[in-house]
Amino acid sequence: MIKRTLFFGNPAYLSTKNEQLIVSFPDDQPDKTVPIEDIGMVVLENPQITITNGLMGKLVNNKVALVNCNGQHLPDGLLLPLHGHSEQTERIRHQINASQPLRKNLWAQTITAKIQNQGALLAERDIPIQKLRHLAKSVQSGDTGNNEAQAAAYYWQHIFDLPDFNREQKGLPPNNLLNYGYAILRGIIARALVSSGMLPTLGIWHRNKYNAYCLADDIMEPYRPFVDKVVRHMVETKDQIDELDIHLKRELLTIPALDVKIDGQKSPLMVAASRTTNSLFECFAGISRKIIYPEYG
Image (cartoon, rainbow, N blue to C red; front, side, top):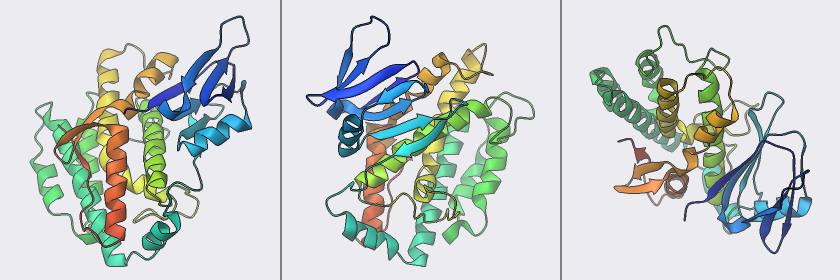
């Protein structure tokens, strides 16, 4: 079942009754209800939203990713359950004890999948991708050759019909759209990691001591081209992308429900993320050596 993503951009009072999320508005609009079991992600943007602790508890128990936004209307925080899986302690032990060679192998698989997906996205526009194919095939353990950066330099030169586009956190549009889309993606992956009994903090490659989502940032890499596709479509079809308005956000919030192909089958991206994180656990536990990522196209 596809979990719903709820976005709240206006003042509202959010509470719960009978396992329902109840939305009450400050004017005379009637209340709305949503079954909590149907929800996968909640984005709280408006600073005048009030949410009860009882509702937050039910959202957490149902493994809903609860995202709050800052004064610039960008995702800023993520609330996840401390107990995401019945075998969590054992699973985290496997994660912590993963050997360095295994981590390097998993990172190589991750970068290979990312470059392959980047190439497939560029191929849709008949852009030559021999360079990316070569880079994807030659990724070494731990990506010691830094194929990821080489691929990124080529990829960002060709992904948009925008001269001199640079991918920068605070760069010109459509960086604003990419930042928002990646923040949503990060929440999806972090939710899936917790549901699979792992800590999003302990990465296989990312290790910045100030980053609480190192593993999420690792695992989301091959998923980024799916966000890029949405953003590219927006760049090509929208007259105005400088300001991240409600219409643009609504389109980006479709990311969790995007159809992707994983392990030979179509699946909503949010469901595919859980398949990826479950396969990651099997690698940590010594059950498998292959992490399963979606294939673009």
